[in-house]
Length: 332
Ligand code: PEP
Ligand code: MN
Picture (cartoon, rainbow, N blue to C red):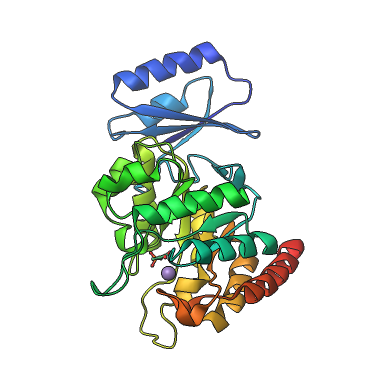
């Protein structure tokens, strides 16, 4: 349920309303916007008399919210949210590009790629240390030592870093990570999401391979319900009947999610397509559709990459893509 207050409402009357609702076991989220102040009522509001609240002097309107996600819902928080990743804002009009290798392979590889993506204009460095691989025989990532290298690259370039967590027992290694990624395969690992709700680090939540937009928002709700409201969503392609690309980039997810939620929404055209030649056109499409940022895989030698080489851009290809993305941004 949401309650929209009248402009210039009396604070004492709001306190009274708050006390009453808290007594009913309902928690309240206050969003003071420029146009209006919105109270988001969370909990079992079925017993709350809508007419009684509407009759209060300070209340403009009351609406029941049908969607099961509350904190992630734009109705609760009409303005776009901005999530700070280190000193880089994402969302609320701030577009951010996250780029780097699929997996961290060596100090040399990470150093070359980190410097290259920074020079081309990326604001956040990505690199997988714990890798969710389909085959148990495939390279599983450098794990903790990969994060150590990522932290060194952060120090060297000044770029904030994003890397994927697969299990909460690894959390200690993520203490200095600026943005913790929950990968597609873990989007509905609810125990992991609950634990991440108790930390303060922003979370990049990628859409599951076969998840609906509503399920994506419910997973964001798990993190937010625990107290961590710094969530960035990511469309990374979904499974369809099409086999020409690794996944199908659901471009409509961008305007749909941005309508339903205030959270920043970025797109990962690398995993969505699986082929480097399609990454630039789909990055441009995502930017034109209104995405708040992009995540792009870049490798200094894609042919020799230990993971996802076929979808990785070389540094010059990345620079070329950024030039084109900037033209779309200027036209938005
Ligand atoms: C990744 O970003 O390297 C990754 C594994 O992504 P996803 O979870 O979207 O497959
Ligand atoms: Mn990858």
